[in-house]
Image (cartoon, rainbow, N blue to C red; front, side, top):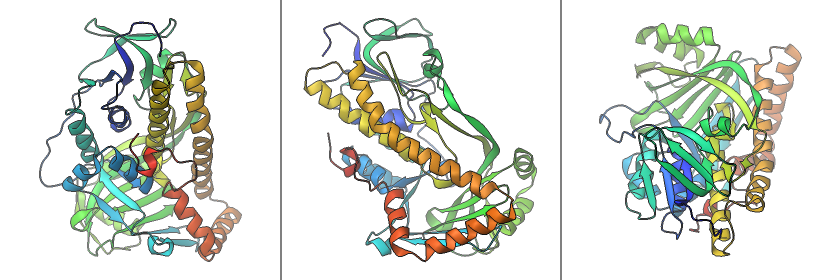
Amino acid sequence: MSTVETDFDVVIVGGGMVGATLACALADSPLRVALIEAQAPQFEWPANGFDLRVSALTRATQHIFEALKVWRAMVDQRVSPFREMHVWDAGGKGAIHFDSAEIGEPYLGHIVENRVILAALYARLEAVANVELMSSTRLKRLDLDGEYASVTTESGRTLSAELLVAADGSRSWVRQQAHISVRGWDYNQEAIVTYVKTERYHKQTAWQRFLPEGPLAFLPLSNGFSSIVWSTSPVHAQNLLAMDDVAFAEALSSSFEHTLGTVAEVGPRASYPLRFFDAQSYVGNHLALVGDAAHTMHPLAGQGVNLGLADVASLAEIIIETQRGSQSIGAAGTLRRYERWRRSENTAVLATVNGFQRLFGSRSPVIRWLRSSGMNFTHGLSPVRNLIMRQAMGMTADQPTLSRGIKL
């Protein structure tokens, strides 16, 4: 470890799901950890209704949460397993069906409300001694030029650490202050999010129809409700937001081909813009980027948060190993290990998801025929379909220890 005296070993900026998971992964270790969040987390909500933002958690992510002893708290609140997934193309006759039973698994993953995830993580952090939680705390200065990283809060407190971790989202203040550029673009799409109850039960199945302006997903929740993620053009998104509930329900049912019957109940609606980018570097001097601070993608595959939590599992493993070896956790060599480990997988997933978005966004008759033929061909090849399922579930060879459900 470094002989330079610092306030903390690790300072994590961003107390969302990714940052809080990293803090949990470092809990009960000899490391001194600070978790800084600009907002005050809210852990009370009405008994009825659902969070508008949900995450499709893979089996690998479930294993991370099990190893960190937070999964049971999520289950006690509310999680919704999905066993199958149906995907079809509105611009052709292509369709593909995934069933977890084909690979001997009880389910493909779980749909979990973001607020449920965050509440479980913070409940765990409240019980540990080596993590200082600093909510409602905004930063005004970052210094990475010395033998350690330091940040200064708006109230004037300066915190120094061997390692600063940026987990502060796609518009990361830390990344910008560190002058790390990104390669990416806006999709010129917005995602409408809400929850609905349909005439027919969702059968613990995730449904996704690729429309000309973007994919429409129905993700299973409890009590027969479904979470909606409808990616479409900004103009169409604003029109959908402006509709009354009856008109929106009719538009949604029609666009989904009444696959689950009519939409009987509609929750509140919101939207957010969709963007793709990958940071030119995941690391800097005493700095590491994780989650959306390092990369963002289209939600069509539901892999965004899972990729970010895999970043966390990898970084935490390297930090713990390095600390046990009495080496500097903020050294360039340590951080390069993290970047090499994550860059290869992240690049492959980002490229694949972006490729699918481009493919299904094309209105070319030739492309439409090719993609429909490809979907039907893949559906007919069980080994390929099963491989896709295992990859999507995070069941890869180079899994971090936490992703295998083993505590560090």
